[in-house]
Image 1 (spheres, rainbow over the protein chains, first blue to last red):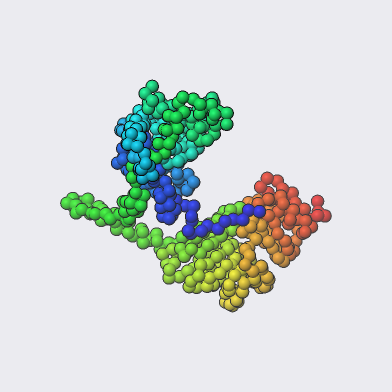
Image 2 (cartoon, rainbow over the protein chains, first blue to last red):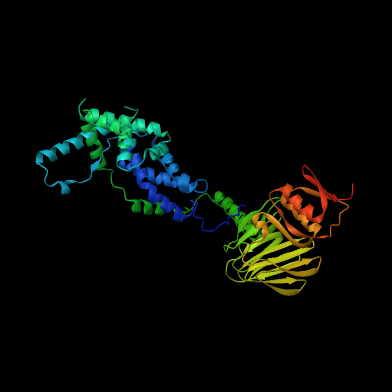
Amino acid sequence: MKKPTPVKSTNMDNVCEEKVFSSLFETNSKTVFNYIYYKFGNEEKAYDAVQEAFVKLWENCTKVTPDKAKSYVYTVANNLYLNVLKAEKVRMKYADTSNDRTNESPEFILEEQEFKEKLDKALNSLPENQRTTFLLNRIDGKKYAEIAEMEGVSVKAIEKRMHLALKSLREHIDGI
Amino acid sequence: MQENYLAKWLNNELSGKELEDFKKSAEYTSYQKIAEVSKTMEAPEFNIERALTNFKTNNLDKEVKVVQLNPMRKLMRIAAAIAVIAVGSYIYLSSLNESIATQYAENTQVILPDNSEVALNADSKISYNEKKWDEKRSVSLEGEAFFKVAKGERFTVATEDGLVAVLGTQFNVENRKGYFEVSCYEGLVSVTYKGKETKVPAGSSFMAINGKITNTEVQKNAQPSWINKESSFKSTPLHYVLAEFERQHNIRVETRNIDKNKLFTGTFSNTDAKLALESISVPSQIKFKLEGNKVLFYAEDAK
């Protein structure tokens, strides 16, 4: 027999609760920022996208359940600049690994530096959807299934993008 | 090589043989390097905390509206008139009571301003004054409801037949035509019926049928049966049972040649009408015929 669940005033599954909302912001805002940045390469716009996406979520907090909130903010952020913003150069920073590689030769370090520059360039030449998929996986450690959910496509489509991204990065870097 | 093998490789999904072949290929070193280096990349800095604070100051703080003086006097006058009407109707509306009602075969949950919970059974209505709630915790009830009262000042439930007062507890009140019952599941409840006050402690029940008072027992710390989608009765005249059946299932009851004052003790389902009919008819030794939204109860020996 189904017991009725009493309605609680501190409803933890309600996005309108400030606590719930803040925790959604904390867990998802960075990825929304990165997501938009990978797409368009514009930091300022990526920051604005985060703010706008969460304003929309706040305004619609009665309609969006917490488990839908994540894909909701990605969709809003994505739609925001759809067809409006032209992709700029996506400039990546690289983690400083020189500390644990002090014994490398200067030639090696130079080569490494060159490789990173080539990779940057190659990334910029990728179509937006391949770059976004590739970076979400490499930098943010997102699983293919998660990226598929964000982009609203199948996991197979993400695998295809990933495959093509790697292929053209390799060709670009090896100068083919 | 399988489709999208580069993606599979990054995800460690290649089989031993495939991986071996891939490692032997000329491009493998480059791919490995890309995978390695791309992992050390970082997106531009994004401060989550600052972004959240920023968001909150822009969106969650109360808006402060600046009203500029308008030189257009006519407009001002109209605005003033509208304001007077608005304020007047606001005051009028806020003095009205908040009320919540259920139909047949419907239950609902109500949260009162002090977070007390009320479960409203079928065909019932509660009303209270939200504005004056802090001064007086008082609810008027028609029908049946289960209350879980938050701790605080005196809380009263007014019904047509009696007054129920508590301090903070769980209890059920049912007031139907000629029938008044208060069951206390936790704490202590005071019932005023026909000017006489009775204390009902946890685990007992006060029942008045057509003015005749009986005290029965209920299970402590439990909930009334209807919360669990059942209706229970103890020595209750059959016509109250049938009335409850009508409310729970929204099926009209007709009777022929049966004694409706016969006492009924038992339980019926509030979700399965067929089962409920059997639960009522078998112990009462009556028969029934269900036709759409109508049921006829008739005596076993009658035609």
